[in-house]
Length: 272
Image (cartoon, rainbow, N blue to C red):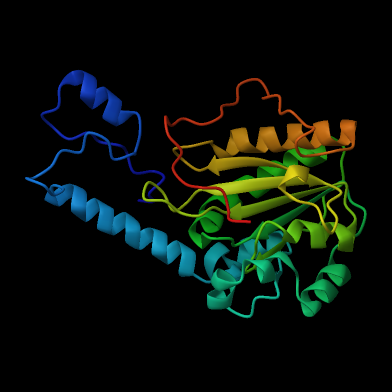
């Protein structure tokens, strides 16, 4: 069972009110203690979840083994790399993860049409587990919603050792109206499977987070992928109408969507 599906089960023996609070969040509140230490069950849970977070950060994205050959072929998905040479350098040099390397630029330019309405990019970020878990569910919904709106949908591709700033390179290279980056968030001890969606209208070199919009905590106990897809499509519409993204854009939630199920965030957005 994935960590986003694992039910939150309060410990037995708690008063009803405290048990109800524990059941609302995976945060480790009211966990109890054994003397000055955690209980054995809490300590084992922490070790398990910390190991999952480390695995998510250090895992390498491999399209066919992670998504399956049939799914990769269905979406004609290919992968490229940033200027970070490996995962160790990526973690030590965030600046290198914000730029595509020369080979990547050539491959993307040769395989992706320029000037589309929406270009989706899949970045491993700081959690390959989040990408593997959420993207196969989210990408078809985005494709459906974008095409139903009458917009063109660029050929998606994946970027290894990816930081959020790679949006600018994609904008310079392909000139889509809107770039949507689906990227693994920094994992926490409540989940390692939380995905972020960063959106930018015509991103260019020098743009910062002030030029981008973010939907974070996309996972089973946060924002459901169905709601995330509706919010992304709605934000694309707003950006197209106003010809801008970032701090000038206020998100209006589509009917029936949610900002998230939890009382507290379960992870942090991808490090930029």
